[in-house]
Amino acid sequence: MNFLNKNMNFFINWVRNLDKVILTLLFLWIIIGLILTTSSTLGFASLKLYNDSKILINKYYLFIFFAVIIITFASFFNETFYKRSSKIFFYISFFLLLLTLILGLEVKGSRRWLNLFFFNLQPVELLKPSLIIFLASIYSSNNSLIFKFSLSSVITISSIIILLLQPDYTQALIILVIWFIFIFMSGINLILILLSISAAIGFMISILFFFKEKFSYIFARFEKWLNVSDISYQSEKSIDAIINGGFWGRGIGEGFLKEKIPEAHTDYILASISEEFGIIAIILILIIVFFLFMRVFAICQTNISEFKKYVLVALSTTVLIQVFINVGVTINMLPPTGMPFAFLSYGGSSIITNAFIMGIILSLTKKNYT
Image 1 (cartoon, rainbow, N blue to C red):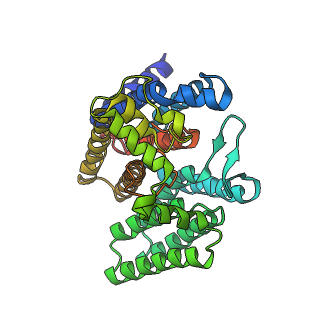
Image 2: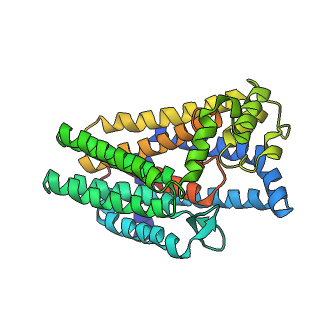
Image 3: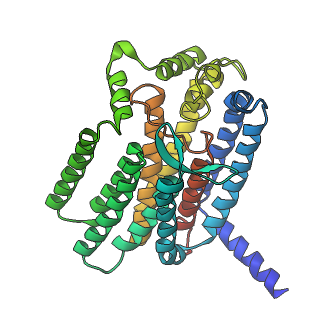
């Protein structure tokens, strides 16, 4: 009986301490994404890939189901747990990333995925939150600033090198941006920050030119993107879909984008949704995402620990950057990158990782619970 009472008290305290604004907005994000994504593209994509309209939809439902479990489970833990577990999380994800170079599935010349039978795991998705937690534990420690900077540099550069060997240039840039966030927040000397950024940017640009053949796909995408008269087929069809959908959309099942490009349910999910449900649906999704993370940033302005502040700012900024990239690619403001939109794009790695991220955010924004 005492055991039941303790568990009930724990559950009641957990619910009471969760930030209700973040929880509500996250719930809306997932539910709206679930409805719009399954209604617009997954059935057709599944039929085309597997000759069965239900396979991808069922897998997507399963991913969302596991995502809800992960969000709940991750939000149970407290700051102390994440601090103590930061090394373990990072070592596991780093090892999985390293495995891609040996056992990774080769797709279009890149080894970015590990075959886990039920779905293909992209380890870099797990690396991002685990790296953030690990860097936060380093920068919130009592060690000297130079030690923190040096250790974080080694960890970040090691991760970037593996990503460049896959190759996955876009994700390498995101890892670099994550590191920039930490050095900006740490209070390191401005000259050292500028030197670090300059060296990092110089390194990333020189890699492109020294190994031009390996990264030829990036040059090809940029050339197409910069050439106004030669817009890529995907971008052209994406913009056409948004225009055809107008403000209110063509209606459920009335979109054509899913028939024209294979990435309609992943990279170009926003265009697919916009075509059938209208620009109003995209505006609604972006408003939900914007206010959710504005709430997180507002909490970061309160009297919370250094570790929490580092983790919350870095996780939120990372998700927002990825949202910005996805939107940018959809409307041809950016060249194609293969960046999914959290909880909308089909993909197990993305959904599960974003669930872990949101679970951590819910955990570290709880009231009176450290």
